[in-house]
Structures are given as C-alpha cells and as structure tokens.
Length: 80
Image 1 (cartoon, rainbow, N blue to C red):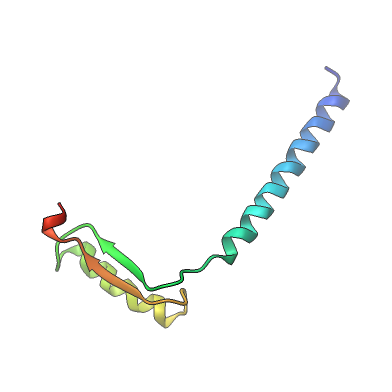
Image 2: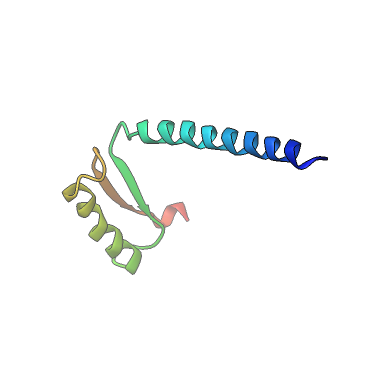
C-alpha cells in the first residue's frame, strides 16, 4: 500500500472520529435532570461516605452545578 493511500485513509479516519466526538459532546451537554437527583450512599448513616455526600450535596446547589436538588439517600439495611 502506498503512503499516499495510507495518508488519505488516516485523514478520513481522524475526521470521522472528530465529527463523532463533536456530535457526542453536543448531545451530552444538552442533557439535564428533570427531577431531583437521589444521591444513594452505599453505606450506613453516619459513615464516611454518608458524611462526604452530605457535604457535597449543598455545594452542588451553592455553585449551581445542577439545576435540580441532590437528595442524599442512605442505603437501607433491608435492601442489602
């Protein structure tokens, strides 16, 4: 295979990948939650993961990182 044909194929591949990433990026940016988000903590209440999620949840609202509220939901022992 000549280097010119290989170069053309590589160029087409790169352009097609670029277009795919651009299309995926615009679709991803358009999504936002339609109802409050449940932040499920996979540990009991009062543990490190629970404390971290309760610390992060108000920060999401304070800095407008999401248009909807994040609600911390500790995993119930009956679900285990």
